[in-house]
Image 1 (cartoon, rainbow, N blue to C red):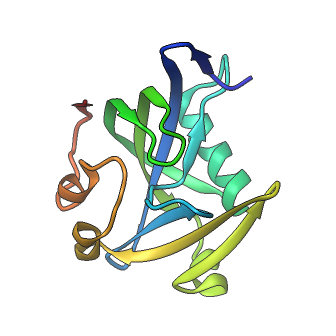
Image 2 (spheres, helix red, strand yellow):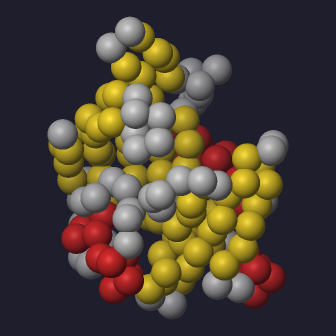
Length: 158
């Protein structure tokens, strides 16, 4: 069971996200009919370690296995989702990931589409300097991606 619940005041999510960086490019994704991009990941399940959750989510979304290098950020995020206009309170752990092999880069190229149980996701390898010019969530990524922390940083966005 995913750790998410809806109340009359909005939705709570406990989420993980993974940064895959290859040759100075970050893998980001965009859902069909969405105006923004984000890094792959998903909700943590009850009784699941967050590190296990990011490995599972990447395997489910991209059919690849990754190594977790380290946690980068613990993010408390309070936002209204662009399309649904739903209020969110989200806790997200961002992990720096490492490809176990370069199969996804070789097989898929710079842009590829994945159908995950009827949901269409388009993935892009974007140069890190390109991120400043596109609508990426959460917004702190645009600045923080330039210099990844050696120790976990706590970031609150409202």
